Amino acid sequence: MLSQRLAHSQQATLRCQLLTLLFLEAVGLRRTWDLRGYTGQALALLTGRRLAYGYRHIERFLAELARVGADAPLTEVLARWTASLWEPRLPRREKPVPVFYVDGHRKPVYADSLIPRGLIGRTGKILGCRALVVLHDQEGHPLLATTHRGDQHLTIGLPAILRHYEQAADLESLKRIVVDREGMSAEFLAVLASEGRTVVTVLRTDQYAGLESFRQVGEFVPLHVDQQGKVIREVALARFGLPLPEHPGQELEVRVALIRDWRRLVPKEPSSEEEDRPQRWDEKPDRTHEYWLDENWQATPLPAPPMEPKLIPIVTTAAEVDAVELVQTYTRRWPAQENAIRDWLIPLGIDVNHGYAKIPVANSEVAKKREALQKRLENVQRWTAGARKRMHNASKLHRKRSQQTKERADALYCDLNHHQMEMERQEVEHWLLRKTIKEEKAVADAEIEEYRQRQWKAYHTSNKEFAKCEKYCREQRELLRAIEDLAQQERDMYELDNHKDQVMTVCKVALANLGMWVRDHYFPASYAHASWQRLQVFFQLPGRIFWGRDRVEVELKPFNDRALNRDLEMLCMKVAQEQPRLPDGRRLLFRLRETRILHLDAQEKEVA
Image 1: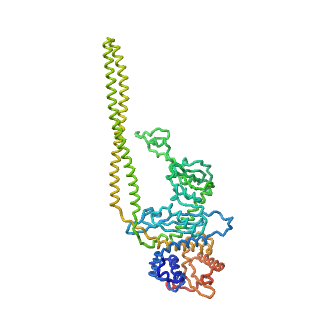
Image 2 (image 1 turned 60 degrees about the vertical axis):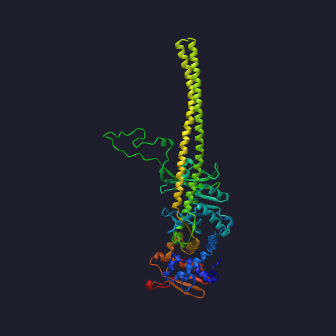
Image 3 (image 1 turned 30 degrees about the vertical axis):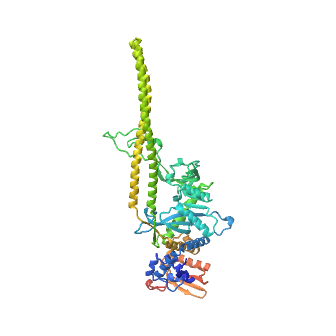
């Protein structure tokens, strides 16, 4: 429900307040709190007011937007606007299948309470944070960004942002998706492939062991060469099977573009024979050894370990693909997406947090550990029962076979004694008697030995199962101790309310798109890849505004640098040619101020 203040606010008032949130970063303000010390006029001009709003007014407005859940409709509006802003102006039959890049970004949140934590990419630390999922087009324009709790994995956020953007922008489907190796889950790729999407990503290093892990490896062809014409990168097409953990025995077949980077050499994986027989430090290539006990022995460098070019396997769920085109599709993600985050979103304050309201939630970290311990405990309890049962059965079998061995030995020796006495009564010669009895005794002993072997086998089985049962019983106590310690050490976890932060994220993404659009339409061609920091000096130029009936002229103060002034003149000429119009219909014109009159910057108050 809308709050009474928002419901009774006029459209013009809401528009000015939203524009204030949108252009905070444009005038160098990171948070609404910074409005307390803001004395400039640029924010008032950008919002169409005589004076800019103050901190308390805008912070209350932002809190009310978060309270009524305005972040959801604002996110949908952003998706529709960016989709129409960057829609390619090509005939439908000439439009190639567009490529979209999805990446995760975490920004740290420093709070006294425990909040969901994640890996911060820039520092490599695990901290409490918020997780952002960012969608870019193939030109690097940020189309949409959503905010989530810090421990959410990209495999959860990616399908959600794709569906969100498709519904909001009224698109059929985002067919080709490029994602970082964080999305390398076989089940995840299989689900996206079943939806008709083609995913391009990179294998993790723990998913393959070398070139031998791939099937149907084609011929390597040059990909990049240096100035001397030497091949520094080559690529070949191959196939790879990703096991599906939830479907034992099944694999997801993917095509692979194998890149061999000869500039980055890594140690070669040892063969099975080399692992069984590691080379000694004093061993020579011919398998002889250094005689280092000799006084005249001179040390020589150890042989260099065998090296091989680093493998970079880029995979796709597409049925057929060209290796070079696949490599280009993925590697374009680095300048198109990661550079856009670095050059635009971070300078515009995407890492700045807004809103620290929290609600208590279950401790997800402890819950995961407890679930793993409970699962292990259940397994160990099942194994204990099995080992105890096998131990008792083996013990009974040992006693039974011991009795059988004793009875059989007694019977065999009794028959042997009777035969010996019978031969003595028949007065058989002594040497023949000894020979016969010795042979019969050997046969009896052999049969008794077979019985004893069966007896001892049951004995050893009983002892082995006894050791297992003891081990499992001890582990049960250790697991129960760990579970109790976990309960005692468990801290209360709180989840941040992301509504306010998502509203500001929408504003920052919108401002980044606005800056890119202005750069592409009005700045010289040399600024095609300019970042926000490079353009900021133009956006924050001081000047004077002259209001006319049909036009608004902005007189800009020139730079001290001639090259920048030439670019500024070209910008003014481009604006004059395009004739952009303000919301009230008046034309907007720029011109450079004459440099004959000197001004003190500290006395200039009018800023455009």
